[in-house]
Each structure stands twice: as structure tokens, then as C-alpha cells.
Image (tube, rainbow, N blue to C red; front, side, top):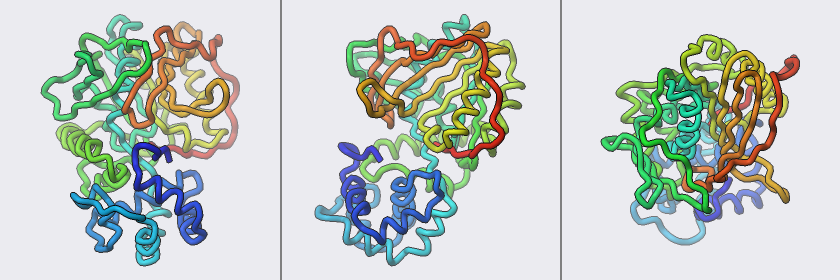
Length: 357
């Protein structure tokens, strides 16, 4: 979990859990493909949001207006012992399905690039790991990048602020690109009309992120007016049909944010091959915000756009960014990472469908 500087509570708990054999054993009861810290902390958070009475609630800014100071680990350990059965049940059943609408501030400039490359054709959006589909509705939000850089729906209750770093200027469109169709895919879609499902989304927000929680609530309320279509199932099974039905009169754009970390390596290869195969036969744009290796070692959140035009594939790193969309470092010229011709090779025979935002 990238908690440093963002969630002091979770940062302290993460260090404490790492040194506690009982808590580690509890966290290990989750699905093997799921991020164990996120799943454990969200399960505890859900119980507190639902009104569980315990001294641990006093440490959570999302639960109390005046959180107490001190070491939360003893209370966390006691809470987990007291609610072990309920937490274990959630670890078995739940998935990490964050729907961080702030990430739309990272995606918007890239959507603008795709629209311009296609002469302003409407975008046909397909999101993998869509959760509740809130990021499919980015054209209903208002965006502020500082210093007067603003765009979007001025009347929107969802107002996204993205700080800019470095010297690059993201190419913000004067008007938001038109969206002709939007479809999400998720193993277990979140229904924005179901209070219990939305509460799980809220539990996945880190306790200190009060603004993010308010923004999530506003996005859910907006989505309830006209919910996006989110199909339930494995992307590797559903994508061929979804992409095959897309009209050739639109700019077909597949995107995902912090989803591939829950794919197995084999599933990632198959996902790449699937998109390359479609891109060899029609123009396709693949936009991703994921952790990627960087020069000198290590990984960092990176915004990447792969274009498949006239059978040719080009891939560029557009920006470095915060994993929750707080800031964007646009690379003025983009960095070409992997140009290649044509589609991908043969498909592998087995896979593990491991994804969800």
C-alpha cells in the first residue's frame, strides 16, 4: 500500500501488521490474487462504518470528527480478534474494487489525444476492472489543473483537482470529447443503486481521505441518475464480443487504472495479445494507468497510451502520476516505449482472471 504521506493511520497499521504473526495469518486468508493489506484494512473499515462499537473507531477520521492520537495497533489487534469471523468472511468473499474518480483527471488529456487523432469522432469507451463504472462517466465531471486550467461540466457536483508537476503541459481539450458508447467489465460489478455495495466502495477509501469520500458520494449520486453498463465476467472472455460489436464510426478506446496488478503474468500476456489482435484488424486505442518499471530500477504509476492505427502499434509513456490521481507529471513529447508492426501471436491455453480496481 502506498500509504506514506497519504494515510498515517494505515502506514502505522501496515508496519504493525507486518510484525504480528496473528494479524499476518488473518490477512493471508484473503484471495491469493488480492492485495492483502487493502483487503484487510477495508474489511475492518467497513465494520466501523457500519457502526461497530470499539475504541478503534476513535482513530478513524472517517468515523469520528476528532480522532484520537496515539498508537492504534493495540486497538486494531483487539478489534480483529473480536471480529475475526466477520473479517474472515469478507476476506474470502470481497475484492479490492476501488473506484477512484480522481484518476479521471489523469485520463482526460489522453482521451483528448484519442479524439483529436480521430477528427473528433465520438469515443467508444471500454473499461476493464470498472467496479461501479464511475470512471466511465468522466465527461460528466469538472476538472481543475490549477492556474486557470479548467474544463468539463461546470454544473457537475463532481469536481476533480489534479496538481501538475514538472514542466510538461497536458493537452487539455477546450471541450470534452464526445462519448458515443461506454461499457465496463468487472468480475463482480458494484451496483450504485445498492446501499451495501456502495458502502464497500466507501470502506475502500482510506480513512483520512475525507475529500475523496465526498467526491465518491457525489459521483455515486450522479451515476444513479443514469447508471453505466458494467458487464459481469472475465475480461478475457467478454472483450472479444464487446470489441467486436463496437461501431467503426467511433474511436474505440480500452482503458484501465490499477487493474493489471490483479492479473496473473499469463493473463497479462493474453490481454496484450487480445488487444493486439483486434488492433491488427481495426484502429484501437489502449490507455492504461498502472505501475511500470522505470529506468534505474523500481516501479512507479505511469500513464501509457498504445495506438493501433492501420495495423501499426506504437506505445508512448504520456505521464508519471500519483496512483490516486492527486498529481500528474506530463511528459511533453511522450516517451516511445515499444513500437511494433501488426498484431500479436498465438493465444495461450490457460489463464487466471485476476483483476478489479
